[in-house]
Amino acid sequence: MGEDIRVTGGNNRRTQQRKVRKDGFTDEKRQIYLDTLAGCATVCRAAQAAGVSVETVNYHRRRDPVWAQQCAEALETAYTNLEADKVAAAAAGGHYVPGPGAADAPGPGSVDHDLALQLLRLRRRPLGQRTGRAGYEPKRATEKELNEAIIAQLDVLSKRIRKSKPPASGRRAGG
View 1 (tube, one colour):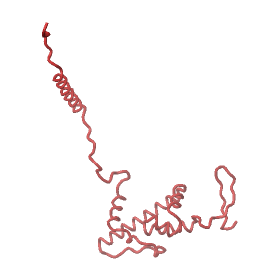
View 2 (cartoon, rainbow, N blue to C red; view 1 turned 90 degrees about the vertical axis):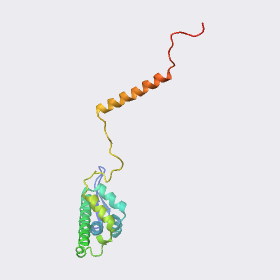
View 3 (cartoon, one colour; view 1 turned 30 degrees about the vertical axis):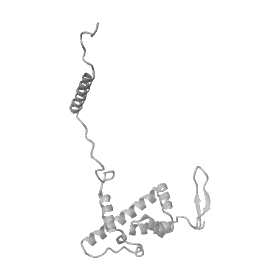
């Protein structure tokens, strides 16, 4: 069987031979994507370098858990490189150089400095934690406070009702 043929099956069908698409997301393109992503931490740039769209990458990420794990590992490597670059810049001790095979990929230095620091802070935050206050925290009243508030409202209401009623008299006038 040649390299331009693949065997596929699905939906309870028999396996069949198909030609590999020339514009398909091949193993070579996947490796280019992963290397570029690890070097620049930008999904759009990595997809462009591999010659595919971001939608193609996300489609395969949703359908293939192994590929999703590889993408997560490449992004983790990119964040580690970015963090090392920012620490080196803060210490004024040189510039991070990407490893072999990533020389032509845009490096972590191409990321905005303030944005990179904010992303690194978010990376360290536990998943699901709020980023800010976004308003006041809700305050819960105790049962005693709730009962006191209800009684105070009932007192105000009963005073209003007493004021709105005409005074009751024992006799009727004129008769």
